[in-house]
Image 1 (tube, rainbow, N blue to C red):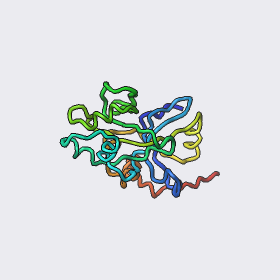
Image 2: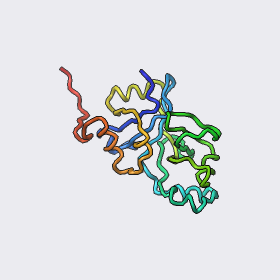
Image 3: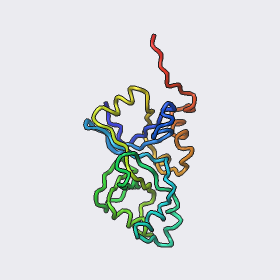
Image 4: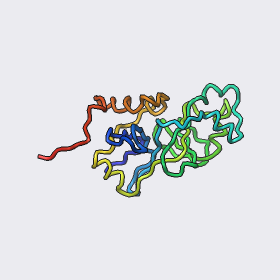
Length: 187
């Protein structure tokens, strides 16, 4: 299968009552060893400014307005580990270029930059934890109609309308996701 790195996984309605219900996942890595992504539309109830203050990284007053977005639950794996998706900047340790409009950074230096008016990336998402798939697991879930996939766009990736993002992403495919039925027929 071709790599889906830089794509969104959109949860099918059949995933109700699960961790991934109505989730949109940005796939950061996808190769023959497995896949890794971050759920981008499940806020944990803590804004980024509050997280930075808890980490004793006091944000500048000029940045306060940009730090009102929520920290999201990136996935069920390693929920204590932080990740930042952000517009490209090359100066961070442990950064990985996911697409033309997004890098993934897992080092504290990017959090220091978020507290600073001069160094912060233009757009960013802070996530705790990640979603991971072992070799061929994601391919099997796709074959089982667990996920829809679309090429990611910066407009959707950095959209802070957490409640509507699932439906907005599915609409990119040209239909309302509630019209889908998870049952498949065989002739």
